[in-house]
Image (tube, rainbow, N blue to C red; front, side):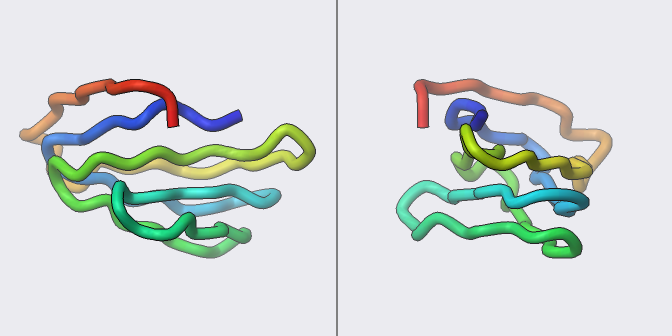
Length: 77
C-alpha cells in the first residue's frame, strides 16, 4: 500500500528496513527501495512512498527539521 502525495515543511528522510518499497518525488522516476536504502524528500516537495500489493515493506521516516512540522496531503499517487 502506498500513501497519497504529500509534502513535509521541513523535509523527510526514509530508511528502508524490510521488504521492497517505492518512493517518488513529483516529476521524477519511481525509486525502488531495498533494506538499507535511504531516500531524501526535500522540504516542501511533493512525494509519496510505500509498498506494493504483493510485497511487504517497512521503513523508518524521520523529519529533517523538528521545528518545521507542517504536513500537507494531496490526491492519490
